[in-house]
Image 1: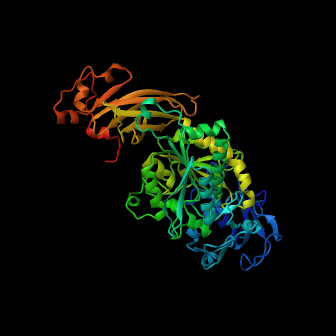
Image 2: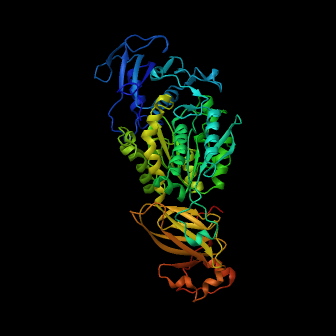
Image 3: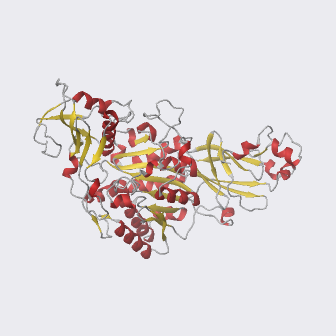
Amino acid sequence: MQISSSPSGLPVMIQGLDLTTLKSLLYDSSSKFPIKPLNARYSQFRIEKVASSPQHADDASPKKEIIHNCDDGINEPDQQQSFVVYLHNEKQVDTLVRKIEANHHVRSVDSSSSSRRSDRTQPPSPQLQVTSKQQIYLKRLYKEEQTPVLKRKSNSLLTYHNYDALTAKLTDLHQQYKNMTSLFSIGKSVEQRDLWVFKLFSNTTIGTPDQAAKLGYQKPKFKYIANMHGDETVGRELLLYLAEYLLAMYQQGDDRTRKLLDFMDIYLMPSMNPDGFENDDRYNANGIDLNRDFPDQFVASSLSKTYQPETKSVMDWLSKEKFVLSVNFHGGAVVASYPYDSVSPTVSNAESAYYSASPDDEFFKMVAKAYANANPDMKNSQEFTGGITNGAYWYVLFGGMQDYNYWSNNCFEITVELSDIKHPPESQLDSFWNANKESLLVYMEQMKYMVMGVVTDSKGSPVPNAIVKVEGNSKTITTDSSGVFFRLLTPGNYTLTVSHPAYGVSMNKSIELPSDTHFGNPPTAYFSLPSSASNSLRPSNPFFLNSKESIIVSSTTCNLIGCKLVEQHLVVNYGISDLYGGYGL
């Protein structure tokens, strides 16, 4: 559901700029912070001139002083005046402030920052001042029209939950469904609040290969994370809705819900930034944007820095669990954004909008569309075609959690922006649930687009951390402790290659992922690596009996063990580094 104060969008009052400068800030998409998405369908922002200019933006209301639309072709003198511009979401409002700061070399001052405290029940003042010699003021008029948002201590739904209420609600759900849930903290925030994770599972398993069941098979893992930015609040509440809905529907015998929980484990993290929520702030209690705090594949310096406690806790959690698919929920727009958010340093003008495709770009577009298509407002977006966008094409950011999940932990994550206003009135929460309920379920069902693999040695023992490649795709994943892997793919025919440095060999297999694949029954490939490289030289080796399979042994490995290459069975001239497949040694 998109919230706006008028059919034209979110009104923002600006003083201290002339019309030419204001339009330049709004429409220059080649600048460092483009406001207007390059794939937008709307043609212009509505700009209105205020008849008289109050000395300060909050001295008088401009609502009855608007005299004409400045985009009507009326020629105005280039002088500093007061304007009301109608933006489409809060992301654009934030970007406008950043552009004013960057272009006029000034610093923004939030007038409410000095009074922030954890027990605040009212939202911060909407006044935001950008101060310089010419005194530029910007005021978010749309916030004046909102009913004050209360963070109640009730643990009932349809209200915002502060930290205590959130903890109580999760605890109550766990007590009610003890045999299907676990509640645990992955760490502490700066202000020592728990970073709660609520796990949903069932004791029934579907889609498990017989061979995997004997090896300690673990269900594929799915997660939703919200409230990474403390003032982006809708996702936090949606995950509480979702938890209660899934548990209740499962117990009622709902077939759709039972398939979800019988096939996979679902992890919900309603708030990654509980301090930010309590303090009505985007940032954590140290003033850091957590979505710029993760290691970045394109920024070498980010790999060795000190991370915020919330960031480090999530990083440690990701390294322990092999998540397969994920969403990071935000607010301030309505769109599903997919990797990459960052760009290679070789790209010129890297701060400008640039399509930064990952190796699995087609898959990410498919699942982003799946989420957007089930949400009418997102699907019919006037800003983003089909309600989706590549992250960097929208705006470039470094140190984001979405990219880190993918390139570092093999978890395919997208970012979903849920609401044009970051912190809408709680009276709208039910409408957001209705708009996103189907999308939440459909997105989890995208786990059907995977192939499963089981990797063992010749003795039948699991091979953990085996490297899995898809021919024609540079992204590699690894097996879990039971030798199982789950590889997300678009429908099609693929050749999979499995290797492990300790075995010195690789195996290839062909597999098909049908377009009409059924949830909970993924195609499965079995791989059995020989216990030693020398065993692979025997002509009787069963791996050579299937024409769709082959073994690759590096010449380096053969030289080390003194073996003789048998050309009809071995692919020569592979260096030992090829077997590591980018494993990061």
